[in-house]
Length: 233
Image 1 (cartoon, rainbow, N blue to C red):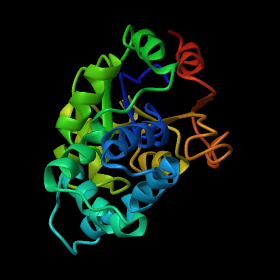
Image 2 (tube, helix red, strand yellow):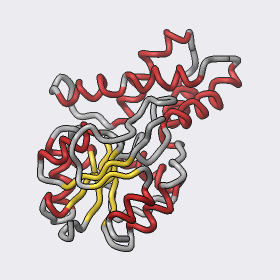
Image 3 (tube, rainbow, N blue to C red):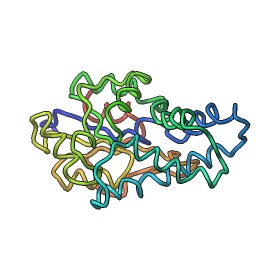
Image 4 (cartoon, one colour):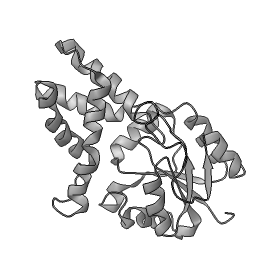
C-alpha cells in the first residue's frame, strides 16, 4: 500500500447522489410545464438506460460519444413512457441535470484529507465538462480529470483504467481505484490497480446499493473519512 501515489474515483453513485439529484432537477425543469411525475421513477428510468447506452460504444456498434450525448439519446427513449413532450431548449436544460448533482456529505471532507497524501482524479464514464461542473459544484479538489473521454471508451474496458495510470506516468500498482461498485473495482484490479470500496447502500433507492464489496479489495469503509483513516491520512 505504501507505493500507492494516486487515487482514482468513480463518480456517479460513489461521489454524488445521482438519484436524488436527477429527481430534483427533473422536477425543477418539468414541473413548470405542468408535469407531475414520480420523479424518482423518472430518475431510475433514465439511469436504467445508462449501461445499455454505453454498451453500444463498448461493443463497437457506434463510435465513442461523450456521456452527455448518450444521456440525451437515453432521455429521448424514456420520454414516451412518461408522456412528456417538450421543446429542444427544455430537453437540453434537462440533460444538464447530470451536471448539477450534489455529493454525498462525507465526500468533500474525505477528499480534502486524501489530497494531503495522494494525487486525486475522477476516472468516470462522465465527460470532462460534466466532471468540471460537478467538481465546481461540490468542491472536489482534483489534480486532473481522467476517465472515459481521455481513453475514448467506457468502463469497465481495460483501456479506461490503464490510460488514467499512463496520464499520471504511474504504474497500475501505484494507483488505487475507489468506487461503490464491485464490478468497477474488479475490472480495475484485473489491470493491476489497487482497490478501495466505499459503501453506498441507498444509491439506487432505500437498500438498493452495495453495503460491502462482493469481491476482495485492499480497503473498504462506510465513508470517505473512514477510507482516509485506513489509508493513513
